[in-house]
Length: 114
Image 1 (cartoon, rainbow, N blue to C red):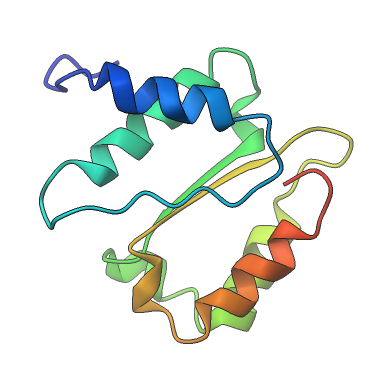
Image 2 (image 1 turned 60 degrees about the vertical axis):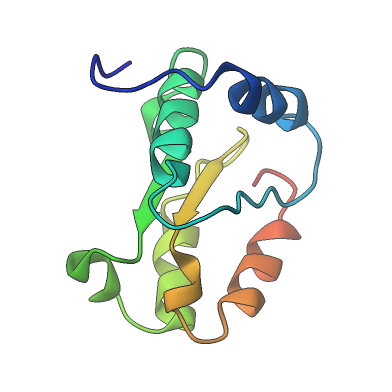
């Protein structure tokens, strides 16, 4: 983990407990409260047991990420990077910046290995 991170043990434990449950996990909270850092910490933890290629992390405040396109183009981009036959972990930070993001998330959710 990054040495500058403040470990958020209770929140990480909640994510660990929900990790294998096939539900969409949503992290909410006040702006600048550490939600993005929490997601990065959890993704880093998952990398210890899953291959790097099984984890996709997108921050939709980053213009490079927004340049992928609309929700259909983002869905295609994510889907093309999925590792078949293994669980895939997809982190979508600030996803509310994408119009119709709910449709994209639902479409990824129905895939067994996402």
